[in-house]
Image (cartoon, rainbow, N blue to C red):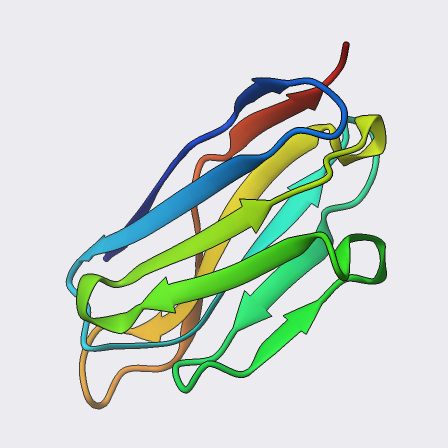
Length: 121
């Protein structure tokens, strides 16, 4: 199995910054795409950003120009630098990794437990 552990959430004032980290561990053969989703209670989980193993990035419209995703393949770690934070960025942020545990296994999506980000004065 693959486990994802997130860190870096917290309380920040509007206009401030936070950096989230997520590291994958366990029985990993290969991880392709890694990324972040966020969810506000009572609503669906939505894409924040994801990044391929080769570094190709995709961002949700609401965070373009403010958030930057990056990764360290050697450490199986993905980062999300969040700048110019707004109250509407308040949510539970989940890490996701698309990977496989052996050369012949299927590709699966693995999720972290989530880290809370609250933007408030």
